[in-house]
Image 1 (cartoon, rainbow, N blue to C red):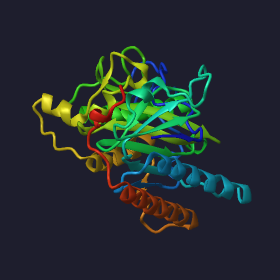
Image 2: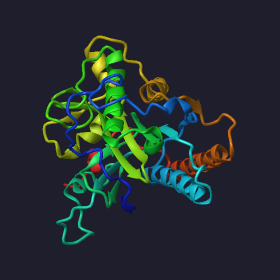
Image 3: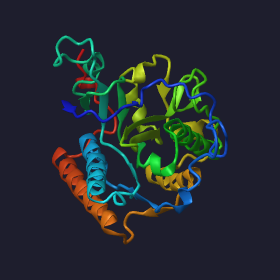
Length: 320
């Protein structure tokens, strides 16, 4: 199934950006303090871990609605619209890509789309740049909606610290990883040919959206193998559980467990307090709670009508 969605991504998960050497949160590759010196005085970041996998467009609308409400509040009161949020979730099986500038006919199938027709995943054409990638169950997706101006954090540093905290989490499991790739590709790699986590952000009035994806189980691998993800022919997806099994370590990770483990790492890295969104808060928090409730209701309804999703691609229906 093919659909079009509004442009939201500025730097895509497939973008190649040279960020230099990996930067631990306590490092100094970004000049000055790792994050703004006043971050501890900012309001706590509210986080929410979704139980229901979100169809990709539902996840996009979630981010748009929260940021739209935040910017609208600022028009009435410059001191309003201050609530930062972190959403952690899974998507239903989905491929996304940017629209090719050299495509004479916008309705022409993308070459990568031809490979995955009818295999059980949706395919969305966006107006962003970048190349094809996959999101689905077994992969943790994180959408931090953070005001970098209030945090006094340069965009480059925000990305470096995000990359570092993901890499350090993998290291804490006893895995050896590269963050970034030795050739400069952004993300977390277990070797020069295997990628476990990707990063891509968008900024709107210095508020971040999108963020990262990390493969937890082996489930995403078969979907990734059908395409040339991010245009990197010699790099393939790998999950944390597969890497742990290879190393002879316990491999009983769950997506929710990884999400819960990353929250305190976000707090330590960006020097912010993180509180569950479900806790009582002010009008802005209550507004976000309502948006999340409506998002979860919409996702449940869509998923119920779809009758679930495949755990692996149905290659028997693949178009030759």
